[in-house]
Image (cartoon, rainbow, N blue to C red; front, side, top):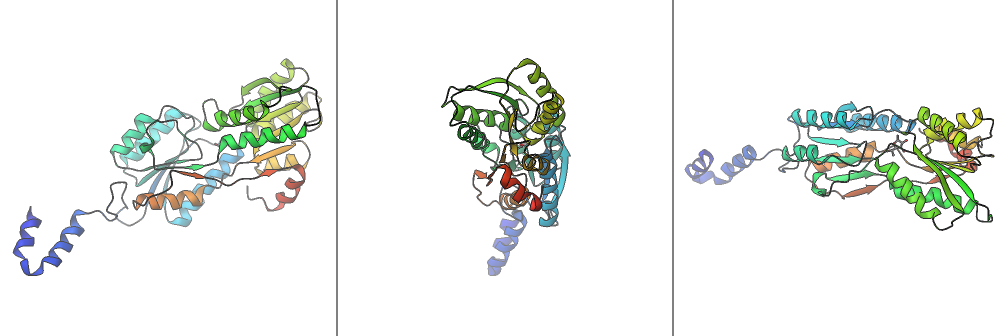
Length: 331
Ligand code: GYE
């Protein structure tokens, strides 16, 4: 009201009055999708899954280093693989009025309520690495990460090729990632779809190893006891595969010969085991999401349009390719 009157009173300098009006009533970026802090620095609340694997450690490092390089103030929270901790962290970010929230959802379901809270507070959310299954796609601005179904398919395609000249049944055991997580669901589905083309492929046992080395070892020990004649192990990440190698060796078998192993991630320890012939094939999943995440965060906070989905580019590695790539591998 006061501004309107003053604009009239200062009839001769309307332009000046309008400028004043604009600058007092509009926040710096002029959008309701977020705001830049008074000092111009973006504050990001980031809720990480945990520290369950080599992939996760590399991902955390990438996010932290990229935030620093991009001048983004990072509030980092480790959920220790628990959804309730992530929900608490997101609520606390909302209370602290951060400019943007990024998180890697440990499981796919159960996020609508907390995401609605962020939306009501006009704080934009970016999904990084893993997806949620919310029907309401307005609850987040974008999803940055790998295509996990495609990764599972690549693993299956290698297997089909590897056994193309054999008519014998191929007994597979599968170590799944964290139950209910996007990579576990999708890597299972992609792999199953490809191997279904030939009935000689049989998944004899499939259980979660929670993406950790310790669980991978434990479950593989149980598989070795319960399932005779295992030909192939498909592990949803390197760490579980590395744990399983210990179990296989402990049972007096030779990994890579008696049992072929396919894993996903391509972290250094996995690549070393591949170069050493213990793993047969690795599908890459890049954890270096930090730089793209910071770019997206800046755009989202500025109210710019971003693509709804940003897919990470990835490759695959044979044993020979691992030997070549290892010396320059970043993680
Ligand atoms: O493959 C696994 C990690 O979500 C892509 O989580 C990520 C997965 C990764 O624990 O090693």
